[in-house]
Length: 435
Image (cartoon, rainbow, N blue to C red; front, side):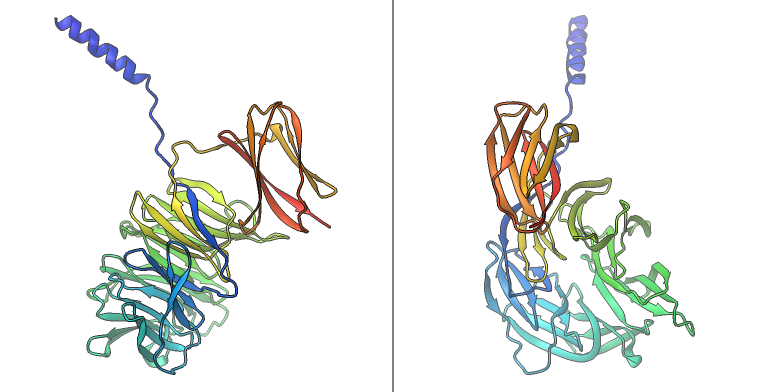
């Protein structure tokens, strides 16, 4: 009996050892909707607490967008006639009840999302504003001589509680962690009596004691570069940093060490504009501009091991909502186009068609696709501009593994991306049209 059980167990182990594990599903960005906003230009955006709306900074006011379709449904009331140059560096409270920003001219702004009205405008020398997790305090970056550093403003008492004086050239970015334990400040500082030497300084603070925990960055520069974006991951274990000189970094806040750096990381003039942690904390998005004869825009999906995929979409605004399994990303910039992406997990990523098996050429501005030993019954062809807007799609039946496929399409002068999909393989090539 024991021998029989042993043989059954051994057979099971042998069978199990031959089963190949299914690779974990990687997310992909599927477009739920795409919309051109021109002449409306959005400079900052935040999801509502329930994810149904997106609050958009448009000029000197805030407009509320339906997240399901990209349509604006209301405009906030500024109430008074106090000057607002623009809604700048907008943030939303954890409760979703308040939006804070600076006005581009030294004032701190507070809006009530329920009444959709401005409820406070403080002429206080503000360069950036954040709000505490209990909605009781504003943390205001200030460059005024008498309050240079961070102003802790008590909203309930309507007064300044204290000033953390340390940044004589003003704070360019400030952010509070999701759990309310920490905040981080990014600023530039000129070396005393040496005008051409500056420092980028990034400091992590304790929210309860307002004491410095550590200086994460103190980088010597020859120009006065500050910080564009500071963001905590949803679990507050990581901090992303985008500097005004187009470097980006990720810090592990448990070790207080830099673990990622993004800048010219593939030999091109490639500059990082934004970095955003996704609700699934294993992934993040990085947006680059590659400066060439024709600028190329690259949105990269990463995990902590490296890049997963590149998308050719233009946009500096990245805001997300959701949980580990289901999340959405609002993406775009300026007058658009704007996208709502949804994660679309796939356990198998498409492999690349070898260059030896395909050639995309233009002759007299006519596009021709040459296939060499490609075994597929159907090809999908997608041509888009460098902003990611699809211009042409076609599914073509293929009867031979070696053939030439002409594309009957009259394109304007410009640079385009031509993608060919054959089964689970794909190939993308840049093409130039000159007329």
